[in-house]
Every structure is written in C-alpha cells, then in structure tokens.
Length: 132
Length: 132
Image (cartoon, each protein chain N blue to C red):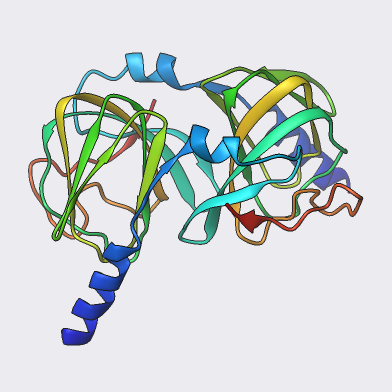
C-alpha cells in the first residue's frame, strides 16, 4: 500500500494541462508531428500541415486526424473528404490515404506509439516524433 | 489479394467525418458519454457535464479529457486543476479524480473501450456508453 501510495503521488505530480494553441505556436516546421501527450499505448500529437503529403498506409494502426484550424483535404483512393475545423476523421489500418493542405492546417493526431508518419513508406517526409 | 481488396473497400466506405459540435447538440443528458469514434482499442466519446461527479479511479486505463466548451474543474486528492477550452488533461491509471462543472462543460474523452465512466466505483452515475 505504501508503494502504491508513492507511485500515485508521483503520477499526480506529472499531471499537466496542455493548451493546444500554445503548443502549436512552438512548432515551426510543417509535416513534423510533435508529441503533446501519452495515454495507454497511444500518443497525442500536434502537427502543422501545408502542401501535399505522400500516399501511404499504416499496416496495423488506425489514425485519427482532428482539425483545429483550417481545412484538411484527405484523399483516399476512391474519394476525397474535406475535414473542417472542429471535425475529425479516422483512417482505419490498411487504408491508403494522402493528406493535403492548400492553406495551413493545424491537426491533432491520435495514434499508437508505434506509428510512423509515412506508414509503410520511407521518404524525406519520414520523421521521428519528439515531445513538445 | 482479392480478399484484402474487398476488406479495404469496405473500410473506405465506412470512413466518415465527425463534426463535434453537431454531435454534442444531439446529447441531452449530463454525465452520459456517447461514442463518436473508435480506433485501435479506444473510443472517442463526447459528454456534457454539469454539476459534480463522484470520486473514482480507473485501475488500468489512462483517460484524456479535452474541453471543447466551458471550464472543467478536475479535482485530484492533492490539488484542483482548471481545464479551459482548447486544453486537455490526461489522468493516468490509478489516480483518483473527480470532475466538476459549475457551468455546463463539453468534453471529448479518449479512453480504452474497456473503461467504465465511474471506474472501479458503481453508482447511479455508472453508464454504459452508446454510439451517437
């Protein structure tokens, strides 16, 4: 019980409030997701998008895109979906997709810790996510 | 390959854009989270809060509270944190907490599918989440 108490206390000390807009202001580059939180086996990531990404898919991870600013064009092989502010879309594992941003878009990503931004593809856009 | 193709096609058809504000308008009751999306082993839930909840903890699930409207008071045993609009807080497993809402608060929850809203406690507030 004492051990559990100590662990809980330590956990409580680490609990922080994260302001999304403030964190996004710290991000300079496009297409480089930064980690803003972790829970269970997942990361909450923040990313600024502008321009076009590459076609890719994730073998065994579903991915959530939540638009907090701007308008995200999500291309799938058979359609294009427009995700506006205050909206989210979940791309299931295995589904090829390509995000596009005509103007700058701010996105929150939710995905397993194992997820690589370019999925099974490797390109100059492949980025290791760091904490922000 | 054919089988995989069919499965992928079916998955693409199920991809939908979810508008948070629109979904929240459909919710009548307070403290009853509704499921708005699923990915990996987790649900994205929406909930309207007003008043006070019960003290509880989740044995093995971390829980994310994301405030989209209003101001959430999150009581921990040793402190109280105020989570404002556009901010989130992650309560690690094992940490006792009690959400309070003086005025109505709209929250997005992210948690494993196994999570019960009242954690290890059972009360009249215990609710099975349904899709919205």
